[in-house]
Length: 373
Image (cartoon, rainbow, N blue to C red; front, side, top):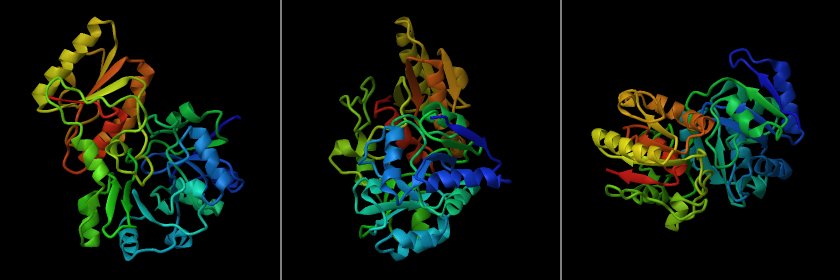
């Protein structure tokens, strides 16, 4: 299959190209497209065979649910068995935007789209190309990230092409994305709303709108707490793909929670602690690896980049600029793939607003390998 890549200006969208992409979706095919978070791999969410094509193209386990992307609130009503009052409040506040809501599904949504679950994850993306594609196709679009399953999510069309060239008919290139990490996921099927995946929209922001407590999935907290270790003791889970909440015995309910995600080719280890101690420990670890002939990469910040002695040192941005850290994360992991490093060490990022979301992605990319100093 030849993959057609079409460059679109989000501010002046070529209608001919968009109609061509929409026709592929209507006919049960796949199109990669930009959202404000990452690039998505889209297909008709209400067509079981189309959803199967997503899993096949990504190499994604079929029990990992897909997020249904919509272009109007009435689309949510068409696929939900019931819509709790919290959904309307959150939609008014955050849609279109990087928030995914989980509700009970009706029979319009095939089990292939939801990983066999009776719930469905839904969001309205805040990107003109995505919204126009959904509306023009006349379909609701199921769309996980447009990468090979397990690899870093794509934040540029070139990342999609690297993973999906020859596997899908079309990629819509709308330039780099704005946020760079996946949407916050909130479960509205329980007595209390619960965050199943942290993201740009935080617990505090959700609680301010709902005027009630929002819980965080115990599986997320368990996976974070399980990887705090003393000096020299790295957290290394047994080989396998399932990490985090699943390892704690709690069944994850949302896309991207069950299987290892975002991983670069090289082994990634996080080093957590006071800044000076982290720099010293990473330099020590780098030296030991280099003595065995290995090529090493380090993920630093603008403030610390000059302090490291490694083959490759890449800054993820200024530590106080949380948006930049999130936006650059996946791109940097892919850059290290291109450099063919043997191992990567990264600082941790306990930033005040998005720190949990950033660390959630890094922990999964590292297979929960953390050294605390």
